[in-house]
Length: 254
Figure 1 (tube, helix red, strand yellow):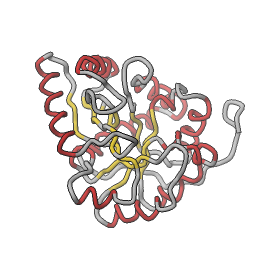
Figure 2 (figure 1 turned 90 degrees about the horizontal axis):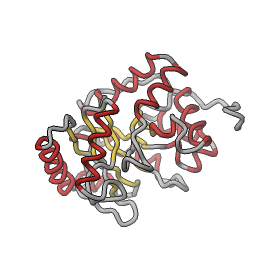
Figure 3 (figure 1 turned 135 degrees about the vertical axis):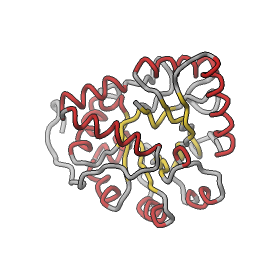
């Protein structure tokens, strides 16, 4: 299994704070069945500034540490960049890092809003040859209030990744409801942990895939797992035609 979104690098953001924390996370990842994990530290999110060059160096250091400890996990480079108007220029300037040096790039929306320029930026990224992935849309407040807001972005060629903890109900009923609504409308292409530690922000990947298999069938689990492999290999992600989100009850909620 490949986990494409994590905060396993030590001392760079609100994830692992030390190398010991990183090692704990690595061991927990292996127990979950993860053999490769993308380190995606925050960038342009509050005070977190993690440039491409710094991330590549830290990924090499962590991989060496894992090899020395005989931990069977490969760390791949990535970055979780908060959406901003200069994002495309930052990629061209070699400041923003794509996922494992592919054409895929993470785009993080603010939790409280969807900037007006979002659609234009996603379009510009695609014109420039990049494939944007909107991360954890189920935790964005406007999308939580109206999940169909994600539809035009996916319809226009972007992808989306939901958090395993949301699928498993660890972020509350609202995020769980929205995550499943988005999955059912073919607006989600990837599942990832967004793990920050081994206590409050765990991986929950196994539980999420079990939930997906039980609710939608094993083929849906394979769909998400294979897309994670396609992503790190820079292949085209599998995708079904997106649909508008249907308004209905979910676990007693509208």
